Length: 341
Length: 206
Image 1 (tube, chains in turn purple, green):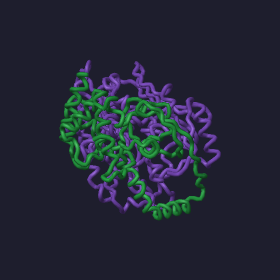
Image 2: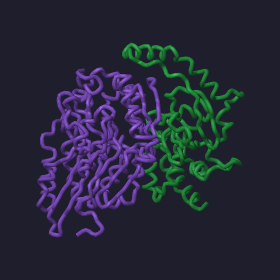
Image 3: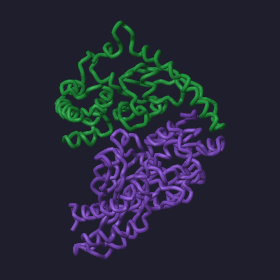
Image 4: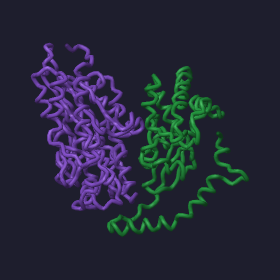
């Protein structure tokens, strides 16, 4: 690991100021340290080389809240994955959120990782993580992509370009995008709020830039609006081993189904297959206004994977993702929900 | 296994000093790697100076001098001399370095020592009672033969104690799921599940 300067911040404004000062002194190489589960790992691998770390863990005291109210779910950016996954209100009203976190990482990592940092985790592409490969457009812009002709079994089939086929690895992000989550940011010019769907660049056009965050900006909270669909929701994750592995395909689904069995609203996020967090709006449109059965679920899944591009080892992914979504749709349709039709 | 057994090799040679002596051999290779890394990136800032740190571990304060990059795991093992916590992958994938910080199980290898100053760290060495009576989880691991080589065991036990305290050990399936962050290459898993299940009952009784 390369040397870095280190300071703790107990106040978000002070953290942003320190971040801007550090960036000015070292050409934009300041990083905020929260759980550290991605950052320190990638620093040890020499993939990330920040020259200044601003430790924002003391902000947990003021920005670690988990609040369920009539308007929705609010998560302080420093709330830990484990605490959200175990929260009784979240389990009851936003099961897809709790499940996406409970099925992610390990108990130790969930105790450490902050929810804001979780959204910003980096791809697991082995050519990105291993600096002995010279070609990686994410690490070294213009150097090429070793995964195209390499071992690309875990790689994306949607949102990919001839520059990069890395897949976004996160689970919770699929719940966030399906449920219209918002991200509250604090920057040198004050606060702003953006839809989570706009946080990540949706296609691999400039692989070295992954988000729309501005210099110095810090995630301070996440919100998910309440709605009739959030209680009937769930997350299905398919992995190479039963636990403690990244998704090779996953589906976050939330449904609002009327007494007549007609789908009033469907929200779908798919993991393991896209360059960025992916909301399958085409699949949602197929289901809206129709009964959810095997036929409509299959039609929706086909729409979700339209345009998939594979590179050999990941040829299996479109079909696996389709079947994962069909399974998730039927599972969520049939789940018992207190007070529902 | 007592600390004495762990540290002493036949003839009185300490295992620790033996390892430190043995570690001199690959020095040349290390120097070469460092030189290549510097050639790649000329803008490396000057190496951070060592700084004084204080960690609270197993109820005692430990002062030492360390580089800012020192992880909690390296501080425990190399600065404080508590070598029960093991370095397996050093990337948060194996769980051998699991310790408790303020009562929560975390990975020592992905925690900066400087960031947990003022917090209460508990390691495998702090689990037994003052009089040496083993924690019920330690006893259960011995009774169920829940290890072969033992390298992952301190991490398994620290994880298992937290698992019971979290209330996640309700069934064998739950134990398997919530222990999945602790890998055992000897595959002692069935015995580990049995040990955790037994210790849970004892921990809940006391």
